[in-house]
Length: 120
Image (tube, rainbow, N blue to C red; front, side, top):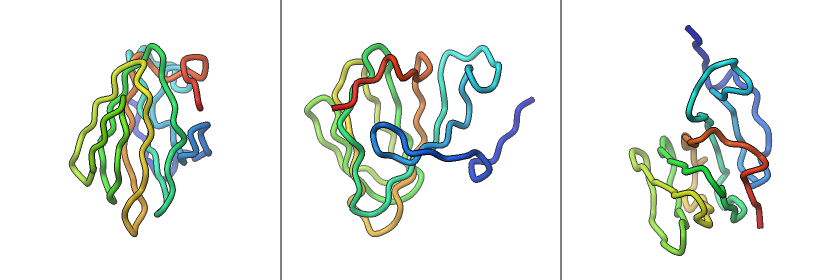
């Protein structure tokens, strides 16, 4: 068993400008997973940088805050409990439109890799 607490996983600023905590990733945890799981945050008024995952799809699961997701030319407001699917190759970014931190889970399949990501 592997058990982690999000707050105990070190965070870093990703290339898309979000604060990321890689909670589960095959390269970090020695697991055979078909996905990676990260926890992302954006402060009020911030947005991620537009980017593309060339061969991985991604799912955002919003936990806290409010935002607007821009995915493949479409826009949707997001709030806690919302799930947004991002197909591989879609240009994407998300902005925090609320007055509190936007927090969301990121599930990437196949697992996220820097070689697969293009940041504008």
